[in-house]
Each structure stands twice: as structure tokens, then as C-alpha cells.
Amino acid sequence: MPPTTSRPRTADTAWPTRQQALKVAVFTLLLSWPLHRLSGTPYHAVFGRIGFIGMALLLAYAAAGRFKPHWLGIAAARLMAVVLTAPIAALATVLATQGANFITYLGERQALLGQVMMVFLSIFFGVLFALAAMRKERKQRERADRLQTQLEKDALERELLDARLRLLQKQIEPHFLFNTLANVEALVASGSDNAGPVLRHLIAYLRAAMPRLGDADATLATELQLVRTYLQLMHLRMPDRMQFSVSDVAAAETLRFPAMALLTLVENAVRHGIDPSMDGGSIEVGGRRDPVSGRITLWVSDTGVGMSETAQPGTGLANLRTRLQGCYGAGTRLDLHEATPRGVRVELHFDPGVKP
Image (tube, rainbow, N blue to C red):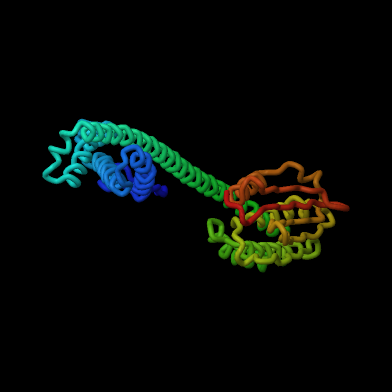
């Protein structure tokens, strides 16, 4: 299931957020100063009234998003709550400060004008802040929706990539198996005395190798071990015509590597390089890690018939390139070079730290 993202607290709670409360408090401090200078009222008294009204409007704004009627949109409910709360909150400040004398107080022209001005400012700034807050919340929802859509898209792409890699893996299994059985057929047809021992080794090899064809947790160390076993079998089949060497690679035990990927190159070197050659040849398998960039280079080099006989890559190489790019990204390369004085050298270049 794709990961989910948290949405801004808009209609989930009847309480304002800390950030909203802090903004109202700061604005109240700033607005109280010019009103204090214009009215001559002590600053703490102005701040108390403005602060009370501001917090009342903020609570009304938050509660309207949670308890709005089903027939009213959330934006309209919030604006209506702010407009209705402003005069009520302003009147509450008069009751709190004047007590039983509030009617006499409001009977004075200057006090009544001040109260009307307070209600007007409360509605004006309350609506202004409500519109700004709703605009910010809308942008947050849009950003969260885009993030959610991107996460779902990435999850689908990963599933598609995994399915594609599994399909390529299934294509390689019969390819490898049929090529190996063809080698056994050639050995038996030649009537070699080594037919029995080689067949027994081959059966043991296939028993060990076949379960690893679909191993998603395969490492380069296990791959190198399979390569050694395979080359030992091929050496038994043609001991006078093929020599080989397999070098260790640093950190191979923990380096993830697609199962049978390197073995495909070795199999091609035997089948298309050593087998067609009258004199046979040798196969070298090795690798190195760049100490600066961390990139890995693996190679399979043979002294067989050369590039002219193997210039057309088949299913194995095409699938191998796709599998490696699926594991290590588009920066992965598979290069074929003509070796000197003869033969072919295939190199794999990839960064094990890159995720597709």
C-alpha cells in the first residue's frame, strides 16, 4: 500500500493550531499600539480587549470548520462565524470592563463610536485573516495531494519495474538452462571419457544454481561462486582448450547483484568465444571498486574467436542490460571491447549506491 501523507489540520479539530494562535497574538500586540495612541486608553487595556476579540474570532474560525452545517460550505461557515462573533466578542469586552454600567457607558457618543469602530476593525481583520488562512490551507492540501499522487505514482512504477524484472528473470532461466544442456549434449556426443564426471558435476551445479535464479537478495559473492563452479565444469569438458581465473571483488559479500547476471557473460564467453576457436583460450573474470566514486567495474574477458564472431548480442545480453539498469539506474553501462590480440572483453559499470 502506498505511503500516506498527513494533511493540514483544517476540519479535523475545533481548536486552532499553535501557529495560528501565535500569529493572532503578534498581530494583536502590533495593532494595540496605534489604537492606544489614538484613543489615549492605557496600552494594557487596549491589548486585553483586542487580544480577547482576536482569540474569540480564532476559536470561532476553527470551530466552524469542525461543526459547520451540512448545507453550508466550510469557507462560508468560517466567514459567517467570524462576522457573527466579532460584535458579540466586542460587547463581551464592554461587559467585562464596565459591569452593570455598560448601558450607561454605551450611551455616551464617543464610547459608542469607539465600540462601533472596534466591531468594524474586528470584522475587517477577522475576515482578512480568515481568507489568508483558508488560502494557505488550500495550498497545503494541494501540495499534500500532489505529494500523495507522486508517492502513488512512484509505488506503481516500482511495482511495474519489479514485474518487468521478474519477467526478464523468467526469460533468462530457460535461456541459461538450454545453453547448459546444449553443452552436455556436445560432451556426450563426442564420447569423451569425462562425460560421466562432468554430467554428475553439472547436475550438482544445477541443483545449487537453479534456486538462485529468482533470488532477490543475491550478492556478488554468491554470483562469483557460481561463476567459478560453472567454469570448473567447462574446464572438465575441455581441459586442454580452456583455462580460467576468477578474482575476488572488494565488499562482494554485501553487494547486491542480480542473480545469474555475471554468469550470462561467462556463458557467452564460453559458447561464442572459446567453443568456436580451434585453439581454445582463456577466460578471466574480475572487478574493482573506484575508491573515490564508489562505482564498480566488472569484466569478463576471453581470448576466443573475437568480436567478429560475437558482434550480434542476443537475448541474454539485452536482458542483462535491462536488469542491471533496473537495479542500479540508467547510469549503468554494458560495454563490449575487442581484446588484443584476439577475443572479447565485456565490462559492467554501475554505482551500487544508486536506486532506480
